[in-house]
Length: 99
Length: 221
Image (cartoon, rainbow over all chains, first blue to last red):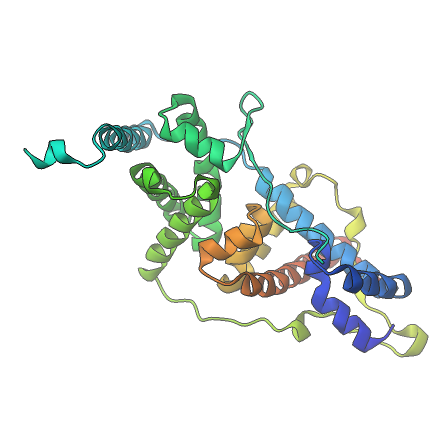
């Protein structure tokens, strides 16, 4: 265990786990991990912690909205589609301008 | 040369008919008036936005309001979305702004900075006896859903994170946005997102490690 080397590795762990490190740096880091059981355990715990967050994010079930809220959303959606249709049929807006 | 772009390739899995759509496909379906896409989008995003807002705002009632307001704004203005491929980032940016509006009505939280130094476990002992105390992470169930206490501890740990870091961890690790998408939502540079993500992850690991050592014991390595 080399304190300075551990500190350097510690600062790079997220990029390492996200596979965003340059290949050379990644090789150096893995070389250190080969000699440092403390850092290996730490990396495993950090990876597991990130995995838990991802599982947590994927675990939400679909929810049913209150019918009144759903009606409000449907109305906003219908108005947007109608506005979009009008602007596609009359891109310059001249039909409305003359009224 | 980077080994991977680290970009998010996450598509929407609605858990309905096994359908999976990309941002661009979903935006296209919504803009062409596809009723099924509308219902699927509302059901899937309502859950995501409620959850995100709860962990950002801390109040169930605020979270529900934020989710509903966000969805209304999405449907009012989705035709103004310039890049359909960035639908998810656009939706979360609206939600983030809604959360900020809510928070302005309540007390301002002080900004807390996390330093790498305080997040690094220190070895105690000397020479061959030097080591760190760490929880037995390998004993956790593969599936978080199987352990409701663990799930609850994770939620509490996320809420404990200072807001600066929580917002990044939520978008990157819980919601699965890429670094660039997260930067776009939070109006930060990608480098700042990476720095905050690393510190946020380390702090979250630290909180969870403490919880696990208290409940399941630890070991010295």
